[in-house]
Length: 79
Image 1 (cartoon, rainbow, N blue to C red):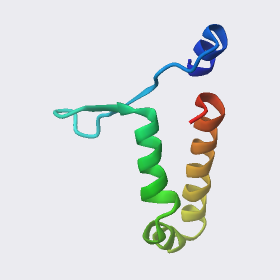
Image 2: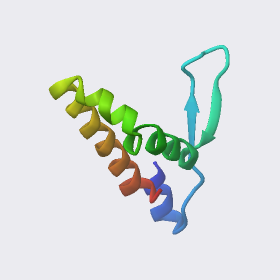
Image 3: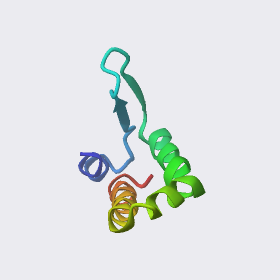
């Protein structure tokens, strides 16, 4: 959706992320804020990386999936 809007309007739209792990207290943030949180809490977090290594191939899959998701967001939203 973001790519379609930016292509048609020739400008980057505001994008948001709804965090609803607690349905009684949903939160909405900018997508940029959410991506920065994921980057800090996972990609560059030595504790997360160490924890993923303990899970063998499943941990490696989770690490690769995280990078895939971030790449997809970058490719479609320029964030």
